[in-house]
Length: 234
Image 1 (tube, rainbow, N blue to C red):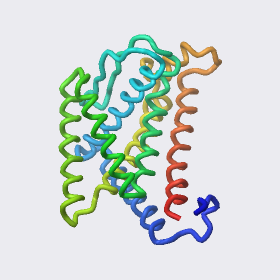
Image 2 (image 1 turned 30 degrees about the vertical axis):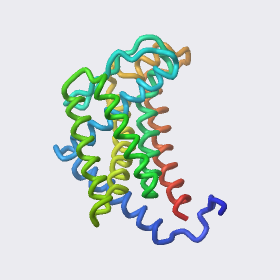
Image 3 (image 1 turned 120 degrees about the vertical axis):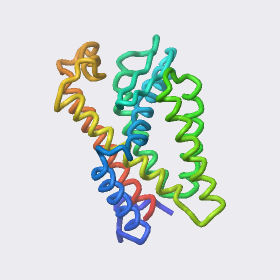
């Protein structure tokens, strides 16, 4: 069957459920944004941000010395070598990319299982290189959380794995766009990735400019996830 790129005869039942679920997730996330309930999911987004730095460092033949995620929703990745001007933007852009993949994975139970499995493996790997107890606790907590969700999915009538993966994906996409706006556009954090990138990039663009560019790319990823999700479900 050919992909329905034009989204003809949209929207069927599954597409409507997808749009409603994403909308509900967005409303819940925005409503609970400053509450402690979203704290673990915000820290997961920081984890994926730092993991993206680490992945690009390894792909460009660098060495990852450690990863930290802090309780104040900050983080750091210590690297040596690699291509610095590729490692710097990988955090924000990579986080948005993972959000898009998780949203797309949630459209099917099999891909949700694959996404959950890959996420569990990544948590176990990072647990081995974590440099502080906040990150270690986050990894252990989400390994247990996803494990319980998976067991419920396979052994009971509680079928929520797809929705958990979707929620994490939407949370990651929204937090990435917000974090770019907060750190790089509304206020200038001089130690931010964008400010450092502006120093090493020969282009005549400051940190705020790169923040706007990265924010636009993150928003494209979010819109692309919505569109491709509808295509997959058509």
